[in-house]
Length: 335
Image 1 (cartoon, rainbow, N blue to C red):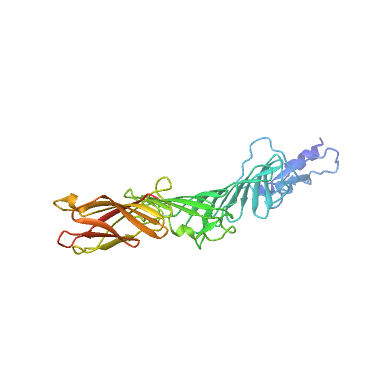
Image 2 (cartoon, one colour):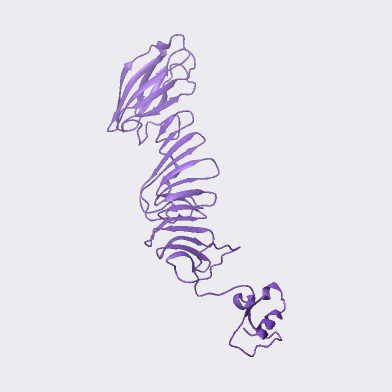
């Protein structure tokens, strides 16, 4: 190398770090003078004025440390991260989308074959389906047309073909629906016939089909702890239903209606007065049958001061204690 070139290198002046020079010496250039004229590439010439570089492609075999990684576009990679659409990042494996982060906090997981396995958005988590439009205040995990959901009221809800929007309960699809709820120690079951279309309102959830209340009462087809002998749904084996009640204070020797017997039914009726010094005198049991609009009664156990009678389909009781009394009664529907 000529001495003039060595002199030229020593004459390169220091610059600020962003413009530090990378000198290149062309040994074939005999015009390079000792005055400092040289060929050089600065850091800016490599990275650009803002310290950035645009590369068609690059392979880094070691560690990459960066404050931020900004993805600006491209096509789906074989394995890696790319910008699928505006403001939407995707991770790909084997040239297929596997996970997506979209605006408004929508996260999607894919099966690698074009199908969606799971979606998390502002209304809930959908497994195998995008979550329905759940109402604000509800959190839900929806697996196709079944779901677990809750509100802020410490409740538990398990539903089939049901979701809750700002209006109320709605069908996910045009099919039957059911719901189980546990709230404040009570357990409640609801059912609904098939809806005409998806997103139609479910109106029958306004009344529970069965309730196990916090006191251990099992209520089937009713919400009253007194029960109902007119229940369309029976409590045992599709046959039995019950009614528990009492009369007002009734005068002695006055026939008083306890309840009206439903048509085409067979009932076992027990009537009694509590607190009597002779309880057997105030405890009667009868069988009431109603068929084709005609009612009949058969006494099973009679009492000296209490009788069960019929007035049409009205089941009545008469007490002859000599004073006003309240009569308790239990009814078991047998058929």
